[in-house]
Length: 192
Image (tube, rainbow, N blue to C red; front, side):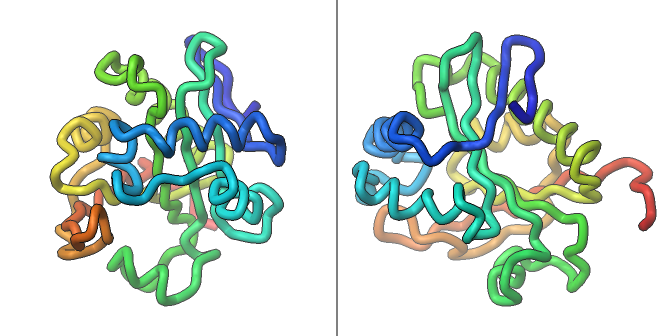
């Protein structure tokens, strides 16, 4: 486990059918897809394995994780050190050239019964602490769609601030959607 505290746990996704089946369950759910990937873009088991296996095996810089609430798997979280991405991918975030110690994250709660209960805030707060303390992050960025107020509220409660609008940033349900680039900075990062 990467994190275990306050009824939550976050662990690395494993190259096991159980983890792939969980992701396929979540990424074929229309309610989840409305906010993550798009309802026109479901992921069946074969596509899940094809997409996530390279990340799990370390062939992709994105690190996939599953998170639990009261020992029940309820969602997905991924992170990536931005300096591990290609220059083109880094430019998508419209950040300064300095991306050392900057991490990008993304997450969703796949079990919709756990929406609107403050659990996402607990998960994200714990993970922010992990990235700052264990990975020495100086800044963490996330890019929610502008029309996802629940996610934006969660991120703001955790300390993220809107830096800039990213027009037509992500293809979602057949249209390019605007996203917010949001960030949280570590207070007094250690200089390396």
